[in-house]
Length: 219
Image 1 (cartoon, rainbow, N blue to C red):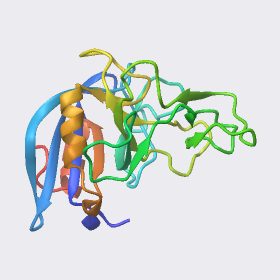
Image 2 (image 1 turned 60 degrees about the vertical axis):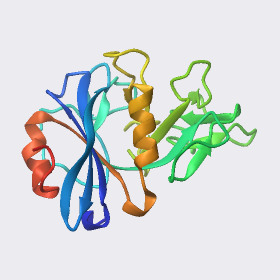
Image 3 (image 1 turned 135 degrees about the vertical axis):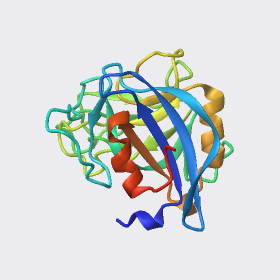
């Protein structure tokens, strides 16, 4: 996949691989130049920090860095496509493809299931031992964005990764990236499928490598 096809980017930078908080900055490319959009906002990543995930770009990193695995409490580091948007309401303010989280919708995190890392309605023909409801009893998934991590569903490499509403400021996640509702709503309104938006999520030590791929970000 060519990176020239992408003109929107969310840059999430944590101080190191074990930090559960980070800062997010939006960027948009115009005439070949990446420029900031809006202000930097605080976000939460995995309660155990970051682990290198499976995205659209192999990112250089030390062999000693953690690798993302199912249930490790780490959010995936790397470069990932974004979408669709999802939420509890029948529709929300977004240009992205939208998936309503109906009461029968689940995301499967059972790596032995054929539906691993997929969002599917509960059906008798689908079998899985572990999943999470997309329409929760709380507001965390009232709106969110699917992160394209491990799209080939490699067993045990991590599943059901989203941008979603935070439980509380500074509260680490099971592996997603969470933030204040107003910050997430602004992102969802801004995302444009025609600009093929990306999430670049990295520790600060890897920012120079990201800047080689996306000149002008993080400055």
